[in-house]
Amino acid sequence: MNTKNTEIPRQAAERELSAAQAELSSLDATASPSRLERALERVKAARNALALAA
Image (tube, rainbow, N blue to C red; front, top):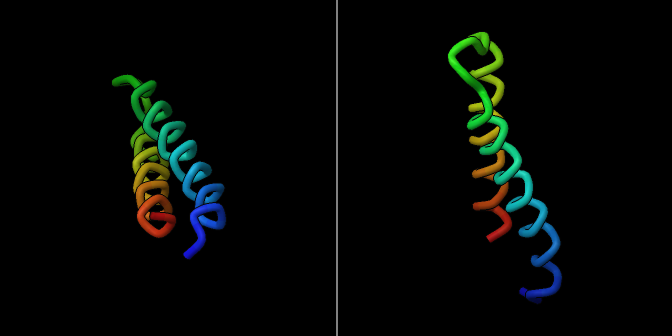
């Protein structure tokens, strides 16, 4: 597979994972369980996207 064809999706997946992890890290003990769950799901989805883009 051409490296250029996979570079943009991989970079986007890396950015999303970074943003998702930052969001999760920003939550504190007062965050609602549903907010925490959404943030965890975002990280999981971003990791899956990155694995597919690799």
